[in-house]
Amino acid sequence: MDIKELMEKLENEFEDVEKGTIQPETNFKALGEWNSMLALIIIALIDIEYDVKITGDDLRAIETVNDLYQTVTERMEK
Amino acid sequence: MSCKIKHISYHLSSNVLTNEDLAKDFPEYSAQEIYKKTGIKQRFVTTRNIIGSDLAVAAAEQLFRESSFKKENVEFILFCTETPDYIAPATACLLQSRLRLKTNIGALDLPSGCSGFTNALGVGKALIESGQCDNVLLLFGDTPSLTCHPKDFELRSLFSDAGAAAWLDKSEQEAIGNVVYGADGSGAKNLFVDRSCFRNPVDEAWLKTHKEAGGMPFGQLEMNGLNILTFALKEVPKLVNAILEKNNLAFEQIDLFFFHQASRTILRSIQKKLRIPDEKMAYYIENNGNTISVSIPLALKEALKESRIKEGAKVLIAGFGIGFSWSGTVITY
Image (cartoon, rainbow over all chains, first blue to last red; front, top):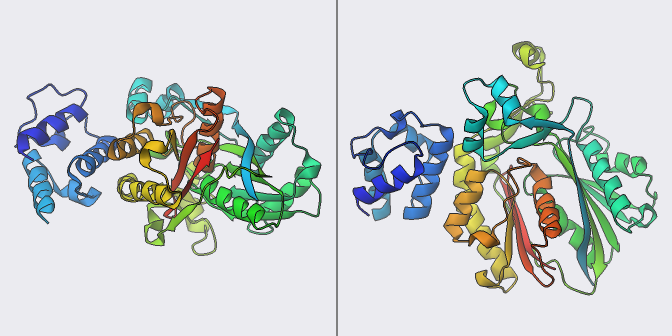
């Protein structure tokens, strides 16, 4: 996986975010649309697309797309 | 001797809770936003004096009205609920009397939630196939709304109060396949009615703290949605594979998948993860909400009405959730 692909996948899950808005340093949880339902959707997305489990606690500690990317790639390597 | 579900009826509580109603209680959301978030248009909620067994009775009476099955022929009732009338006696005994059934029948409660239908079907099948009886009236009824805190948006926007009845009868055809079960109590606290029984009962301080919410005398339903989703994504694909294996079936041989209608997000995630084509996936949550153990029989009934289930179809059913608990099988129509 690369971070570009992850950014695109994230953008698809946000309905009110325009393409190209999400960057590696974007704090996606600070976007207006963010809510508990989107948190669920992101956890499911990571599970389905990358076969990696992230928990609610993981997501709480993650801020930027880059953080998420690091967590996912680290767990994919294991 | 095998068995078959011969008829299903269900009953939804009569009070409709629309997104417009919810938006009045939660002004931070518009009705449209609530729909966007949950994928649910309406739910059904009871009033304080109508509880799970009442909804099961309504469903059973409907079953006797709309089918040829007779009360005098019932040989066993299994009542599946998580909101019984009393701790004792078993609500199934009270239901024998309320439904005016014979007294020489079996009557057992089966406390079970989201996996309730598949659990009860497995037990009913075992009763018939072991020759203990020729039929089982499976009854379901739950009122989650009575344990939802009025300010809990997540729960109130999701759950519905409903009842169902299913007539399980002996048959030559092996219509109900082998059943797979699972349980993991380490996940119990992720969906949990706090202060609901002997372990940790309601006390004066609790009633005082929850005064504005009517005291919450039956306890309070609490849910960790993130952990439920993680559990579902981990266990449900394994459950589906185990069901297929135990019934010597390939994934492609299943015509329709009926999962417990937990939430739109969970259903969509399971569908994506298992790569189930849209036409094979059952969604009946939009107009009904999450009706706990009623969700699968309700969905089966609706799909039958829509002629979505053809004769000979192989239908995989899978319940999962509170417990954690999960079970499922394949029904051949």
